[in-house]
Image 1 (tube, each protein chain N blue to C red):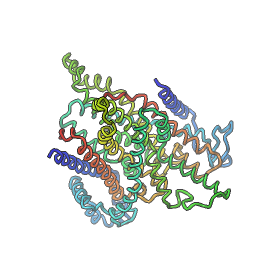
Image 2 (cartoon, chains in turn green, cyan):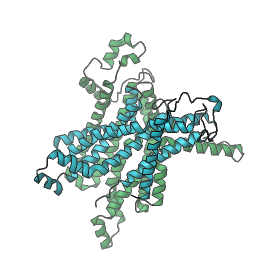
Image 3 (tube, chains in turn purple, brown):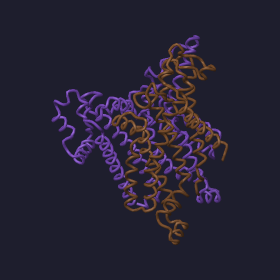
Image 4 (cartoon, rainbow over the protein chains, first blue to last red):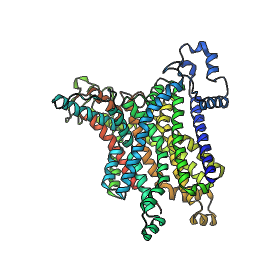
Length: 313
Length: 265
């Protein structure tokens, strides 16, 4: 019963946060200078129709409620300038699925490598951790730029010297191949402090657990400590996962743009450049939805594992 | 202070010196264009050589610091002005005020920072000062959350109860005893984090293009993109901004680590 109550709270929090994010984005656009109808060719001629379609003739709360209702039914509006007249949902969903193929493996890779390093480094400041920190603090775009330059230049030298044939992925990032996707996953998993910060968080949590009284008691009894550590580490790892999700979604925009990947991040950048507000807003709401979903998964895991959270509910 | 902390401090001091020197050097980004000198290697006249338009890479690197130092400080001020009072009030008084502030923080934090910045730049226009304010606002949930957690954990501590018993006002307890005495290292850490994040944000936007600092104004991000695009043969045009970005973020990271407090068991 307590578990169900806790899960109910978590679910309610998910919907309230998502609704709040939609309202926040609506407020941003509402406060924007200028008239959105000016963005549409011959928009002035169709002002009445466009105002009715975009709810511009209604007050903000009504507009927000209408958008929220439509958004929960999967209707995020119509693209203005990116693909004029196309449904935002039809444009954004396939792109979001392509992005998920980069985002999810990168997140899993970061967590896995961070946990392994935290487990074996033992304390903060070991050489492996220091090296990871030095590489990881480089921004995503810089790491991508350096990786692409290094791969292209070294491969070109080998091709010129006749040592190898031209590989199928050459030259990055123009050629579409799995190597480019793999590079995107690696750079996203490591760059902009992702790996170093997650490793630091996991190391901190692991050290805290290793010094906890119940672990000392287990050691004194001669019991195996590993399973206790792993079980009690799950809520902390879930928290790190949800905290980093937003960061990864932001990094995805950068990596897709730098490596010319055709995902939701690159689409968002293009929509912002072309001032396609409905598409940009739809993609932002989807990004917020992805972050809220990560938080929901994390909260469910924490509630399921940690009885203290159920007690608190 | 540890050696890593000293190195961090030195790197950031170097950035500050570069920023000040660039301000007084009077370098003119337009007058410096001289295509006849395009792609010149490093020499006594041009310490880091020139780019394909013959512009001095060293001078542009120095002036590039103006794209992020001032705006980065404004981002920190914005985050503090909103985040510290919000987190402190929520942590000290609790109740509906805390719930409201936490809800707003959660909502803002659910929007990825980079996405929020991009949307604001598209809607309100491309300006580096606007970028700094948006970056600061997007950092408020993180800062407010940290201050909230610290103040809440100390709001009923013995020294706070004793201060109340001595008749010290609630505002003084909150502002001095809780925030100034107990949160300043924490706030310093987040300031360094935000400053490093702002550099990352500004250089990323300027590198990709379309937003951020535009040519002919230099930014370490657009220098990297511009010089690589033309590949003049002067490698410093690419190496110098890349190393500068890396060292500055490294400086923030090392100094921030110095301010990490030991976690209480």
